[in-house]
Image 1: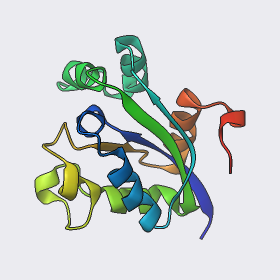
Image 2: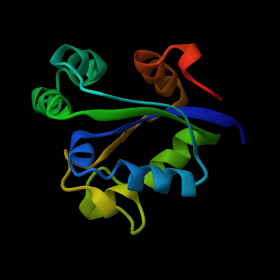
Image 3: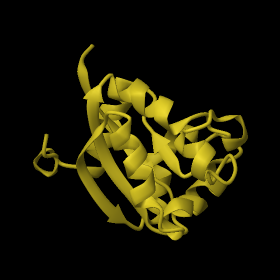
Length: 140
């Protein structure tokens, strides 16, 4: 297996509840290493650009509004098969369907306020990471 990097976003519902440390503990306990991290408040334009792939979907506007509602923590996670491993640690999109011990089961409130975002492929991880980070900001 190859060492990969993936983007993780700790969403507004989690930052508003001050549980970023608890979320990060699950990533680290799951074998991923945080190699870049920053807290920021997305503008609507940033959210629209980041989620442009969903622009035609019915939930797009609501998603963008939500992602601007409070600060987020964007981070790069690194480890063996990091994209897949991160998705396992996050759990199913709907917290009600997520496995016990996953971030979304433990902290997610509903399908939208599910506490975390993670890249869905190595290709998208590279695109998403470069949206938020320059190379010199990643300390691998």
